[in-house]
Image (cartoon, helix red, strand yellow):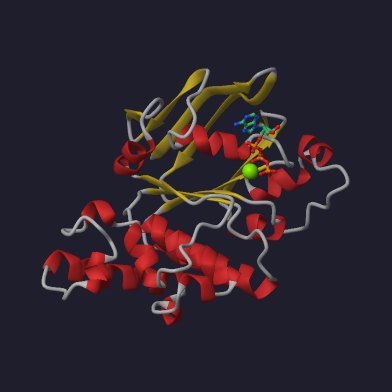
Length: 256
Ligand SMILES: Nc1ncnc2c1ncn2[C@@H]1O[C@H](COP(=O)(O)OP(=O)(O)OP(=O)(O)O)[C@@H](O)[C@H]1O
Ligand SMILES: [Mg+2]
């Protein structure tokens, strides 16, 4: 089933066309990757999908519902959550509080930290804390639940951001370069985490420069170059595509 349908999406900044007439679909249950050289328009496309930017042209349909021009919080409510290219973990909050922030619309107290600081008398809040713990287990960061956000390794920070996005109970999860700055072991932990999230029933659209990770976890790949879609298909097809190799000239596209 088609979950997300992007048609003719375009966005210019002054004279620069950052996203140029891009169309693709994301089917339910898959991990789809969006790749392309620096400045290809990947983050801008994410911003268009999540209400952070308004397109000049084109449509985005999510589960049959038009999404363009919705405010970011309405996009989240519709079932699309995201992480950002720059890590955003609150250093002074504990890891589990960071996850609860993503649940604030569902908490009875209306404010995440309240769930932990007040006696947990409200059932809804106790359940939220339990769910946050479950999400930390799902991403593989449960051992850091009580650690201050400032004290956790970079790789764990990425996992916590993903858990926080999952706290909104999205059907589609958008990840912008989750492996940036991760070492090999952390990247492998991330790959395992993404597979568990997929198996748990969440569809994933991932922007990523780490080609090893992309080729390993993706069911399908869309390639952007200078705002345009230049290829789309399975990892095997994409690695052999001359237009993709040309766009990445100088960069190695590793074997699957
Ligand atoms: N708000 C903005 N104002 C002006 N130009 C912008 C804005 N946002 C993005 N751009 C430009 O649009 C182009 C695409 O940027 P974008 O951040 O989407 O690329 P990207 O594919 O995410 O790159 P990277 O891999 O480096 O993250 C770039 O040339 C960028 O400078
Ligand atoms: Mg980007």
